[in-house]
Image (cartoon, rainbow, N blue to C red):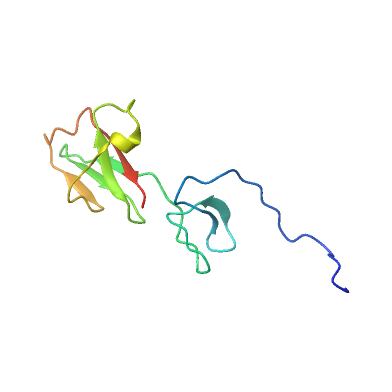
Amino acid sequence: AGGNLLRFVDRVEFGPAPSGRAWGRWPNGSGSLDLMTYPSFGTANSGPAAAPVITLNADGSIDIHWRGGGTLIATDDPGVPRLSWSAVIGATSPYHLPRGNQAAGRFFSVRWP
């Protein structure tokens, strides 16, 4: 068509992404727009970052699952900035907290790379 625009295939509007993160479609190139786990310039999207899923088991233990890497962090005071939350040393997903592990009253999140 002589270099003239014939139609729009897609239009997306979004706000700024947090530092070190990127917007992308998941599944790659076709799904909804979401914050990705990490920027993946020129390659397939990394997959959406998801909040950790916390499961209270029948025996009173707790399992924390997350995907896409990241570091499990915890605090006793959710009012402090997340940068001051402490890394849970050695935590990988799924992370298991046995019953009576002092998890009550703690708040957990994931700090993405």
